[in-house]
Length: 86
Image (cartoon, rainbow, N blue to C red):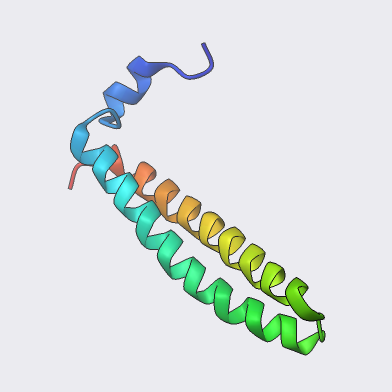
C-alpha cells in the first residue's frame, strides 16, 4: 500500500486529538482564506470590469478556491506537527 496505516499510527496521526487538530486548522484556514478570497475576488471583478452575473460567479470561485487552498495548507501544517512531542 502507498498509505501505510501503521506508519501513520507510529507518528500519532490516527489519534483522535490529532485528527481534531487537523480538522480545526482546516476550518480556520478555510474561513480566513475565504474572507481574503472574497475581498480579492471583489477587487479583481471590479478592476477587470467583469459584466453582470459573471462578477458574482468570479467572486464565488475566488472565495471557494482561496478558502480550500489555504485550509489545505493549514491542515498540512497540523499534520506535520502531529507526530512531534512537545
